[in-house]
Amino acid sequence: MNDPLLSPEEIALQMKQMAERLQAMGRRDLLLRALGVPLLEELRLEAAKSRLQPLLITRDYRFFVGQREVELQPVHKAVYMLFLAHPEGIEFKRLADYRKELVGLYMKTARWMDKQKIEESVDHLVNPLDNAINEKCSRIKKVFLDIMDEYMASYYIISGHTQKHFAGSTRIWYERLKVITLPRELVVWE
Image (tube, rainbow, N blue to C red; front, side):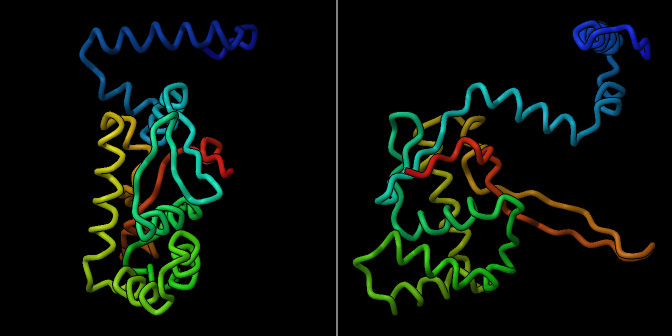
């Protein structure tokens, strides 16, 4: 396998043959260990790219996937655009850090609304003791599921991603990020 004379195509063929042998032996566990979960996630995304359609956001903040409009209320659009702007993810409990940005986005998507009403609504969204952000994310998810299958929708919705962190040898903590996994090159701003 380490033969420097092998082309990438020949290496890929050998990998395919070895993967088939492990599967035939019923040892998918070893195959998974050899690839590793991060690489597997990258490969899953690469495989999906050919099927994913661009998300078009028009000047007047209408959202389209292919020819289908993703019909969201202004508050949902603001929340969605906030998460699009942060591909690294955001923890719900830290949403207050994004309050000003969220107000700005909401004001763009709901130009006819009173600024005070917008700010009150955003205060509910960023309050970690309020369930408003979960309700908005659930609504966004439902709208995407109404226009595509669950597998495809999983790239467009705001979903959970947990990162494990170690501080020293005794302290472990988890960062529960919410992200949109859609590759950003598929997001088209008109």
